[in-house]
Length: 133
Length: 133
DNA sequence: TTCCTTGTCAACCTTTCGGTTGAAGAAATC
DNA sequence: GATTTCTTCAACCGAAAGGTTGACAAGGAA
Image (cartoon, rainbow over all chains, first blue to last red; front, side, top):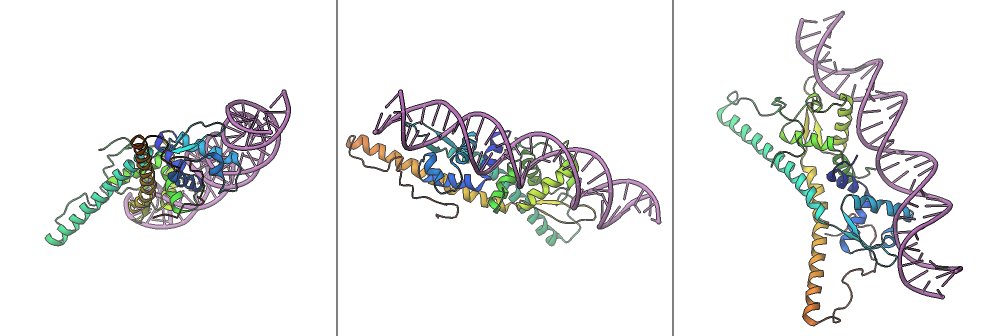
């Protein structure tokens, strides 16, 4: 798992503890100890979680004496939002198109509409990850 | 992993193959065979992927003779978008607050601003998953 | 009935994930 | 220099993910 960045981001946020940490970091930067406080897991486990978040580009770390403050990098959210919005919009448009077809059907009476409602079956797809506008 | 729905959704989309399937399904409904075509994995593997997507609420399945057409349920995207937007906005506001503080500093000269820039250190957090507006 | 198509269930294997404990690095403090 | 604080590295462990193959159910079609 986790080849490209998008995979790493989704994977990172799939864990409730890590999502919770992101929520905490949205309020303010925090050290590892501060982040670990609410959970009853070892500090090492928290450190691992942070490595995952960092690899996903969701947080960055600086240095401050022995401390390593963690900072939320909110730009990465845009990556997800863009991905989600594309397909949500596409699905929505499709739904409206179907609606239009159904409306036309009741208007003209059944039998006049041809093809392309559902199950078009042309299977013109393939890897669609990076395609479309 | 995958306790609540949000976890299941993020987890489901962490896999590139499943994301690709979602992209394909945004175009049109499809059968398992149609979905499997682009990939060189077994049909069983694809079936498993679909089960994951279904458990996450991202797709629904109907019945049509032996076929089990898969349909994208786009509403679930809103769940993610809501989560993401909350913390993105929060982080953004925080950034602007910092900006304001910096502006005030150069205006009044250094030393007049007190506390609360970064590293407030109050650690008033805890589980934040379901909190805030 | 018999066969073919479509899809799932079950068992198994390997890799990754999230956690643990123990040792150790890095930097301030005694 | 020795100690304390904050954090990571390394090795290990059980559970889950993602894949495989083999059997089989469900439903047309011959």
